[in-house]
Length: 470
View 1 (tube, rainbow, N blue to C red):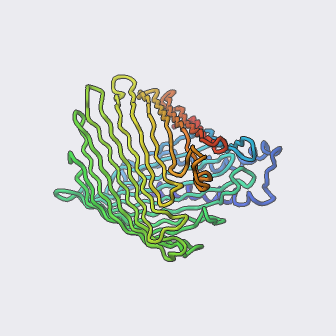
View 2 (view 1 turned 90 degrees about the horizontal axis):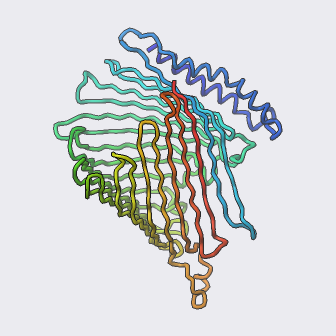
View 3 (view 1 turned 180 degrees about the horizontal axis):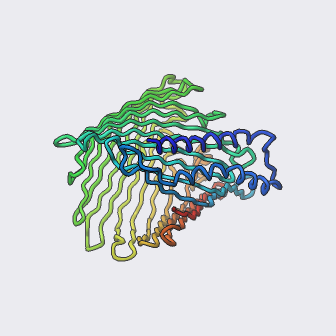
């Protein structure tokens, strides 16, 4: 217990220290000009040395205490990386490009105790110092299985704090803090397991806005699930909750709903997974935001055709119906599906090839569209290198957009959205250089070519991470 208290004290010190260092970053005392960036980073590294020492101290195993045979086992990692978002679009008779990038240094630690009569603990602090923001997080969890019996208790807490530097491209975003407390009770019965979860969360923005709204959540869920050893897994659950907004109480809401799941997995036969969820949201002030029903459904299935070849089918559906539909809140039905062939990467590289479709029906005809595309992918899994890439090319047609303007109405010519051809390219690479060092690369590119050239746009994302585990 002494080791746990020490770790908690040091971790809370990280939050307190970094909060004090960066709380004044919007003030003149630490305002950073472009030509002073080098001096700022030198001062920052010097100021953070105490924090780094604290995190490294966490990695040293604490002496075993009375009643805890093994004490704490710690591991840690240090990562540095670069993220960039690039968006291009047409504005004021010329192409415009916006870029948002960030360099970041991340220090993480994970401490765990073995399951004992007093329960098992897990503690995971993290500090991320970037060119655009500073993030701190503390994730804790306690599990207790009295006497190794059928009952298990879990208590978890997660604290996060994000500070945006006032001189960066993200200066329109507000600093925020979030706390989440979760209590879970699970008991194994003869034919199933009972699972009860209570959750409370609070999110606070320093400068709330219409897009960044502070909130408080209370949630409760109860479910009956199949036992862990069952061949076919299933779940039936109920949920209820309340969300309060301290700055805009008109959109406070109460929620209740139900969900079901079923999963059949077979290594040498057909596999199937089904999910369904329905939810009712009742809003305090219907004039600010109407109450609604939401329904979600998902299906994934596969059928073996040969030794490593299978037929794959996917379906996702979402329905929103509002008590009083308005311009911003329209009744909608959206569904998407994929049918194709997949070769698993068991004996060499795997691949997939299929047809993807998507459809949106809305009370607003300008939002209604249908989409069709072809999706292909490659993947390879290995102890050193793991890589996957997916390419989808297709066409989206809006019901309100027309190409024959001679016979079209004014509203059809001035449609909010225009038809376009799209490309979606995704890349994911993980390279383990040795037992301690790894390199991770993520990337995506999503261009759209519209009937009206002025609507053309593209969105790109890239991320590179070099990690060292110790």
